Image (cartoon, rainbow, N blue to C red; front, side, top):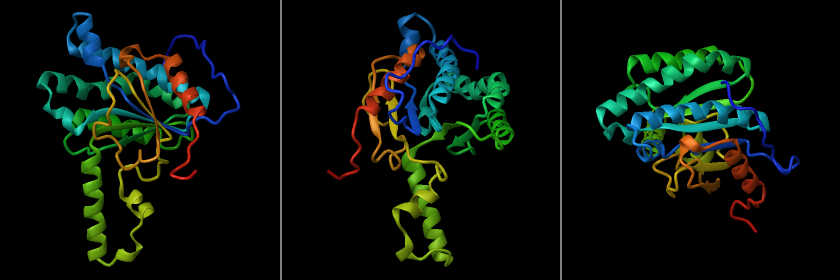
Length: 246
């Protein structure tokens, strides 16, 4: 996780930092197109950005960082691009795992593993296992993840447990539903960041983002730097979260 020297800090060191930041990393393809490069070049550069953002988030005290790495809809892309994207977790984790261990980072995967190639599944499972005893930042990759599918699966499992007598219908609550989601055990995101100028959720954490603060930027993901992360956090620190109250 080698990175550029850290030169930026938060303006208000006393204001609370979001415990959980979720990022929709968007704009790799456009970044490459602007430079006359193939789309995979943008994905490669985007992977390099991750190491700096993880380091920066860890430095300012973020507890969980969720990165939308591959959606259930991304399978519709050209096979060559999908094959390259499926290799990225293996490449990133093989290079960065020793440093993630040094940084006390916990790797977690949110999404369905069944459709992942064996080499991708093996790489992420190794990272999850090796970092399981760490106690620092949770680096959560949303990989082959789609929120609607997640919610559907959660309710299917709830119905099954009701039928089996493990759960009573009258006991189903928001907290119970959250426990059946793929993100069980994680706090809900305090701040969502989306790069590249798009202003939509794209089937990402629809349940969990109900009361999150949103921050959108025109910066393409390969150009996203520590100062942009700090700008998003500082915007968050200047907001009042009312959760529907006054």
